[in-house]
Structures are given as C-alpha cells and as structure tokens.
Image (cartoon, rainbow, N blue to C red; front, side, top):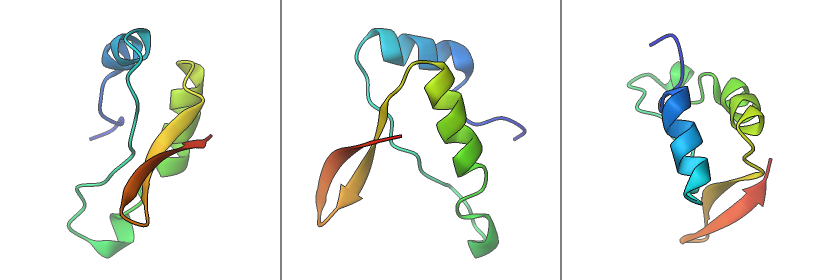
Length: 65
C-alpha cells in the first residue's frame, strides 16, 4: 500500500455520517506496527476529524488529535 485505508472518498462519507476512526495496523512485522500513523492523523485532520478512538483500560474512548 502507498496510502492509508480507507480511501479519501470513504473518509468523507464516514465523517458526513458522524463515524469515528480507530487507527490500527495489519502489520506482520513489529518494525511496521505503527507505519504512517502520524501521516494518517494529519490526513484525518484534513477531512475534519478532531478525534480518534483508542482502547484504554478495556474500553473505547475518544481522544483529540
């Protein structure tokens, strides 16, 4: 992959329907576990997202980006 998934048009749809984003990885190598996460956060900001969802203490919660 050369760009994060989902594609930009899907980010637009997710945002317009009030969807939330959880950044994750499908890496099979530890060195790539967080590949392009910082770029992904910047991309999300350009589509108007102000937060992401994380798992903390066994519960999902929103944190600002």
